[in-house]
Amino acid sequence: MRSLGRRARAAGAALARTTPGARTQALTAMAEALDAARPELLAANQKDLETARLKGLSAAMTDRLTLTCDRIDAIVRALHDVAALPDPVGQEIARWTVPSGLDIARIRTPLGVIGIIYEARPNVTADAAALCLRSGNAALLRAGSESLNSAMAIATALRQGLAASGLPADAVQLVETADRAAVGAMLGGLAGCIDVIVPRGGKGLVARVQAEARVPVIGHLEGICHIYVDAAADPQKAVDLVVNAKMRRTGICGAAETLLVDEAVAETLLPMLAGALSDAGCALRGDGAACALVPAMTPATDADWRTEYLDAILSVRLVAGVAGAMQHIETYSTGHTEAIVTEDSETAERFLAGVDAGIVMHNASTQFADGGEFGMGAEIGIATGRIHARGPVGAEQLTIFKYVVRGTGQTRP
Image (cartoon, rainbow, N blue to C red):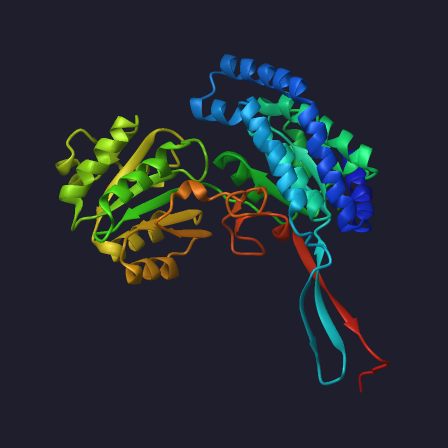
């Protein structure tokens, strides 16, 4: 692990001296190498899927783990998209002159070496490596045991692309062991070789990282996302958005986990929503008022409002208008993504301004909570903290800045 850290630090220093064009060329070469390695990727993924079946992993975890030709297509496209992004390194954020005559500029610079710890998400290997490279950072990746074979195959292809482009292959390194001690070593910072840790996985992983890390952390605990249907919502639009927000992919952090419905329209609208969700295969857990209108619902407990199901389960509560929705969200939100469905622009603006989350949405599915959908090429995760980065973490969010001061001989009296 110490050797990996030293090599990452050396590669990061070399990357900081490369040009945006060289990084773009490397990203394109990485995408081409990954595209050419499809047979190896699919074969490695089959090993992981067989292990997943033996371990009895949930359907949601298995879905995250699975690679298909279409998903490899999407990973390759994401690399090309990141290659096409503006390079943030060296960007001038602000510039001004002070009374002493000094010219001061704030300039984006790489963070350095970023350690990424993740679980059953093979695509994170490519997304994280690409975003780190675009922002001039070296990436030290630690995949979960469930996806280790897939991650190793992807990392091998990415390193081949880097080498072919003339950049140091050690700019992308994968920890090739499932030993949990490797995570502890990374959290300790590898003797100053890691600058930032990004966890991407379940609550247990992220809680451990946040509790034990001796370096800064960019991460989120859970995605308990709410979608509120207001009295002024278009009924058909509400049905379409709620079903998509929950059921398009239930195992992603942007999937809705709680449906809030304005009690003023619940008598007519809730049965429509419940029927559409049930037809889509979603199990519903409602509060007393919701169960009274839709008796087929299972009564919800307080634990349901605090649960990220990552499955075809949705908790349902009736609330007293937008104020009631915002109160519930304030109590139970994890700061990931919150959405309102309404045709009343004033109500929408009240919700967007008053709800504290990394992402707030109006008349859009929470499934759009994704860096790629935000035009960021890809994302390394959704940050729910309040320092440095929040929401989708793309290349720009993986930079810091320095002040460049230009003078003409000034001395301070």
